[in-house]
Image: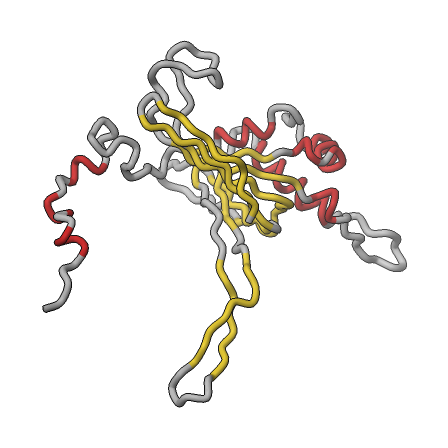
Length: 241
């Protein structure tokens, strides 16, 4: 006689689905997370040369607030992933193969922003791309572009997804009396820079918001966690990946 499936042996088939998303249920914080509560922060101040260049090409740029301003207009974000590249060795037995890991890869991420009426978003990312590969040539006889050193155009980013249980008794990390720190997961992305800006289509007809999508490459990321179950809050140090 075979063993019962885990869903049957644990009687999970009798689980009311409403208890999976109601945070006040007996499951506490073990409920599905929503995908529309997040924040994206780009730390332009990490590279003074990049920040100064972007400021020269943007009338509305402020080094101290541009990261926070862009965070407000990020309409679509993506939590970074990773994949393991493998190789295969055929064994001495017919039909048997062994797989083993060789490299760990970090796929590109694409973030989308709403465009403001003053086109601040477009100015910032166009200037960033221009800083990496300036349009100005060295001289008229030998026209060529001199790429900027990576240490100047690579800066850190943070993508944070958090829960909606922010209303309640405060903790020491908050200043407002009725706001508390929620559960969250933060991907601290290192050495990021844009590689492409997807053109935003314009057309007659019903008015729609203009969006700008930017694809980034990066070297690696670390993860920072905070977790809350009711009034119990804990945090985990950054985990290097």
